[in-house]
Amino acid sequence: MKKYIGIDIGGMSIKGIIIDSEGEVYCQGNIVTGWQNGGGAMCRNIKELTEDMLERGKIDRKEIVGVGVGCPGMIDSKNGVVIFAGNLNLRNYPLADMLHTILGFPIKVTNDANAAALGEATFGAGKNYSDSILITLGTGVGGGIIINGELFEGFNSAGAELGHMVIEANGNRCTCGRRGCFEAYSSASALIKKTREVMEDNPDSEMWRSYNLDTVNGKTAFEYPEDHAAKGVIDWYLKYLACGITNLANIFRPQVIMLGGGVSEEGERLTKPLQQRVDAQIFGGTEFSPVQIVKATLGSRAGAFGAATLAMHTKD
Ligand SMILES: [Zn+2]
Image (tube, rainbow, N blue to C red; front, side, top):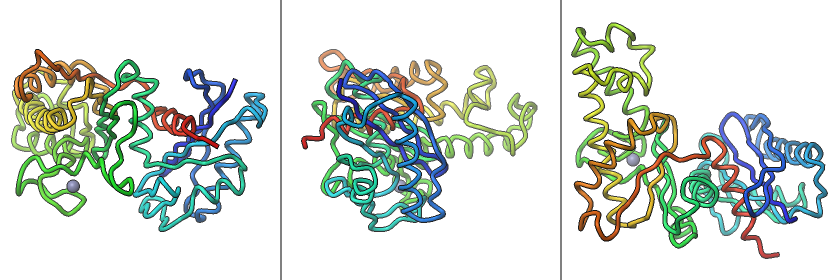
């Protein structure tokens, strides 16, 4: 059986997985990223992880068709070059060539968010659909777009930056320099910031009694659905999240929009009211072409699954 290796590079650790084309997992593992010691050290860690997985899984190198890699930052996926990755301190780094030299397998590289979208679309919540979008609600808002079973990355694979679509002109400042981005309203960070503001304005609220401003997290408001202040936070959050999702639904009209990242752990407490709001706003209504909103199912493994999926498209 042909097998594929997926590598998901994060700021702290690198996750690895070996799967077949059905998504069956033969081995997985992780290792420290070690970017502080340079790109070469990071690549040697990937080699160590790969060899460890092959050994533990008792897998012959001949069974491996290729290796796919998801990497944060701006990636030239055609040439496998990391154009810029601030979190890894890499610039114009020929990641695919480096890994090919030390591993000997064909290498494909894409952005980590795109890899996660491809993973969810192929083996997760989107597996029964041809058109899907993954939106991750974490520190930022990321994700990826799958059209007709293929990743849509834009020119030089620099597109699909879902988090940087403006949903409030002249709104809150975003990390990218613009104002009013989807990310500035719908990330876990934005939710936490809003929760703190509302708590300060409402010292009589349940949230204020149970949390202090340092312990507030993305779940705080959802824990008190009966509390008027918490309700205000959730209404605010759902309004902007529904706006961004509806925009994406109107442009791409996928069959399914999958939510990942920390905030998606709320499950139906999030997806149910969101579905109602999106259905009420979506262009042309829901009868002819409904868009389902669901929780992503692969969790933190989506990126590694997707990276391995990339390797399935390896031709040589
Ligand atoms: Zn932005």
